Image (tube, one colour):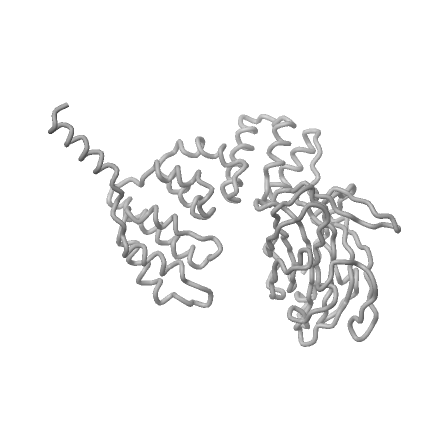
Length: 398
């Protein structure tokens, strides 16, 4: 090879290997958007930053998707609209989005689930074949939305042309499903196909607990007011409860399919009150977990004596799995204590004092856990969520 040719090759390699120059203006704009907080803090800076990001056009698409952080929903909404505006501008100019980069991004679980879903949507909008190609790879994905789409697609394929899915196929899909409505649907289809589907076990609901209360929560300040049960990890002894009455621990259980405990029935109706439910969960090894609570009341979750999560809000609805605490289960016995507070609102819709609690992995799927329970003086361990005769909770008419 001549010297001239060698120089050309070396220069070519150097050009290819040289990374694209950093765009400091774009980086600053994305940082400003990521700094937006609740109650509008940071909005004054986010507006101009949003315009800067969008003005960069297609070159800003992937950096903007990478900037998503699902722990900051307000910032994620700003970024999502910026991505939409960039995509619209590129389409209007007749330019296609980088399909290979979008596909790689959608498949990479290190990025925020909402950003991966957005990348997937942009991809299938311009590549009809991407849906069938990618959805099977999302069946066991960390992203709830991508997994949901994959489950729906797989069920549609199994039922194509009026076919009845095999029991084994439905069992696999049921095990992978995480959304409540899809779980209910697949459970019915699985039972109809001759299989078994235990929804309570699949969710990992705590349906046995030790309960104590009510305790006083003056002026609706139960969330801030500490009582003895949240300081310890053992059941036993008597405590001074509401209005000076003595309260003790008692075992309770629910047969509700979705693990619902109604404290107004278990402890009577009380206002400005606090109750505690304690469960002993046995793990085969150290496991990261999520403790998910559904309740219209203010709650705190303690794991092995330490606060895992708190949510101080009353009667603003009770979306399924809305309250999520995270922690690590140790090998062996773990004590989970749930504090459920009631305020003094008088409206009819504000009388509910209830909870559901489940322990699961980060996708909402079951963990290999057992629960230690005591019934009739006998202590034993059962599979978490074991519920031999589940019943449907009857919804009261408003």
